[in-house]
Length: 244
Ligand SMILES: Nc1nc2c(ncn2[C@@H]2O[C@H](COP(=O)(O)OP(=O)(O)OP(=O)(O)O)[C@@H](O)[C@H]2O)c(=O)[nH]1
Ligand SMILES: [Mg+2]
Image (cartoon, rainbow, N blue to C red; front, side):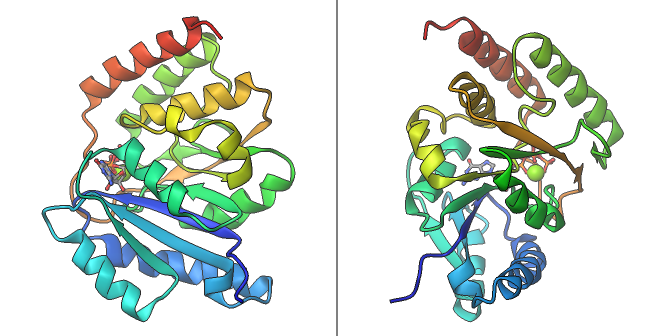
């Protein structure tokens, strides 16, 4: 019987048909090299789970075709209860890997950092790719300073790290399950606030590694900055003042 893969990379998608193949073309060589280093066939080392919310632009069809020639890529299509947090949760539930990697599917998150995220799991329970420490940064300066300022506020407010809504991280699945993921993965990027806040609250060790956020390959952003600012602030207050 084939052994379970070591890592499960969860890629949520909504209307990413234009760029998803190119992004997967970047992911496959990196994980293939990691598999080679461990002397394992790719499918026994990694699975790449694309969780698509039945995007109207046909992302699922593109990924289905891709997966036919690349069996490490798996497709999960959701037809109801649309949303980023719940999509990642569905990916986590479907994952067979020992380690969960969460990242965007549009190239914002630099796949070249993946080996480091995995290696650093030897030193921490949760490893987060961070734009705001060391050599980290973002391709877009205006967003960089806005996001930095909001994270500085979060940090003063009791949040544990410099990049509290990075969205690119690695954690062992067994560890993640102890955090009751259904209570974390809902809403939009605010799931990440819950992930780091709760992980810190229960005493998990969180380590940040610097990364530069890249530009998305194609397609449009789904983030609405004003809406995010309000919902993330409300969630920060809720987490900070909720009774244990
Ligand atoms: N399954 C699913 N994926 C989503 C949903 N909303 C966003 N995504 C995916 O989540 C990731 C992050 O969304 P983005 O639109 O890139 O948000 P962003 O990174 O803040 O914006 P950009 O910097 O402009 O890329 C991308 O891979 C999206 O395709 C959703 O409702 N369901
Ligand atoms: Mg993005």
